[in-house]
Amino acid sequence: MTNQATQTAGITDQEYLELADHCKKLVELAQLEVGRLKRENKEYKKMVMSAYGFIRVLDEQFDIFLPTEATYVLESIRSYLSDFVENQFL
Image (cartoon, rainbow, N blue to C red; front, top):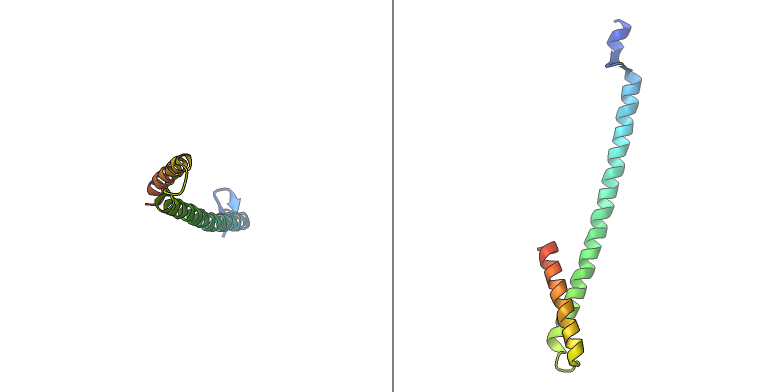
């Protein structure tokens, strides 16, 4: 075999292996980051859903006892969270 047979497109086999190893490490790091972001996203969704449920209970159960201003605030927050949940989660 000639020296030309051990080279691919101007790079040596060793350079090709190093490049492939480097790319593999980059993909593995990206996969770890995607996994972390998915877990973080799931936790944020849980928090939003919990807040939404709590506000719904307050709005439906305690509007008799709350001042009118508080009822308006709860209705606004509930409406905002309801739209957000519907658009983002459903």
